[in-house]
Image (cartoon, rainbow, N blue to C red):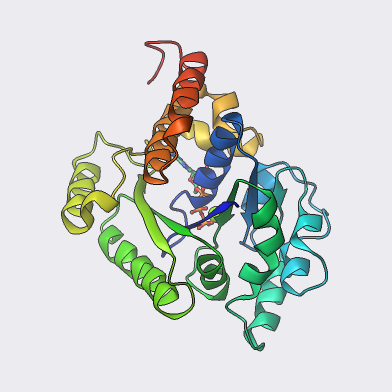
Length: 267
Ligand SMILES: Nc1ncnc2c1ncn2[C@@H]1O[C@H](COP(=O)(O)OP(=O)(O)OP(=O)(O)O)[C@@H](O)[C@H]1O
Ligand SMILES: [Mg+2]
């Protein structure tokens, strides 16, 4: 039975898609059967996986009930494009609109180990569907003046999903992402997040690097493009595995890290 994780944030550009792509890669390298779901009509995750732009069917067809989720998996992912925006509008008028994705993913959940859902930059119906379909919510935030507020709002939506339709939903963590820890502002943001949300804030901070944009542009995962930069994601994966009570994967993760990043090469 797959663990399903929704990756979300209250605003755009917090590195959700990059995190989803990178964690899919790390967990796949650990031998897990992972499927990534692009729940954003922008289709950034689909591009990052180098999925054909006209790939069909997509998540839109899954949500509108035309195909099974398993039949919409291309390579490692269920892609999305602008048609997902139409599907979301259609969904809005339907009974059971919040549980559509959960029902659609049921079969896939049975067959795979891990499903990662990349949410759009709004906390609307698609994000709610992702939360209702998930066991865990992983929040991302940038180091910015409004970070705290954004994380609070995202948490409210997580709680709403838990209180109404998905009592099992847990908060896996909050990741400070795209952070330049050389700036005082980023360090203060991290401190404020920890003060406010305690252990929920992941110890691993994903540091800012232009290598991520370059890896997305080339549709190559960060650990293939610049393993030294991607080291943060190995460390985050380790933290998440502990939180998910999967300690048996920590030794393989250590081996993978040693193989990818020879001692001293990490930035
Ligand atoms: N650690 C990082 N350092 C520097 N740039 C990053 C990092 N992670 C992601 N980026 C870049 O920041 C931009 C936003 O990242 P990404 O698309 O992953 O965010 P997002 O939250 O999915 O955005 P949206 O809300 O629009 O879906 C992209 O150009 C991406 O390449
Ligand atoms: Mg995105």
